[in-house]
Amino acid sequence: MPMIEVLVSGDARPSREQKAAFAREAEAILAEVLGTPKGRMRLFVIELPAENASDVLLAGEEQDGGQRGSESGG
Image (cartoon, rainbow, N blue to C red; front, top):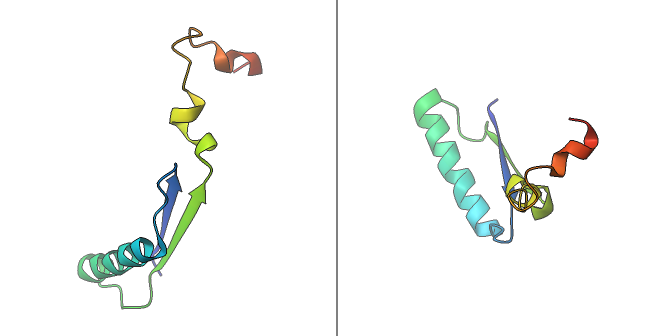
C-alpha cells in the first residue's frame, strides 16, 4: 500500500477541499504510474508550526555572522 506524507508549514495552510483535491490527484497518478488500485493509497497531510521551518530557523543568520547554531557545539 503506497503512503504519501505531505508536510505543510507556514501561514497559508491548505483547506480541507484543497487537501481532498490533492489526494484525488495523487490517487490518480499512483493508479496510472504504479497500477495502485483505487482506495489503496494512504495520504497524510501533516501541518507543522511555521517556527519549525528552515526559513524561520535560519532567518537572521546573515546579520549575526552565522553564529546562531554554534552555541550547541555543532
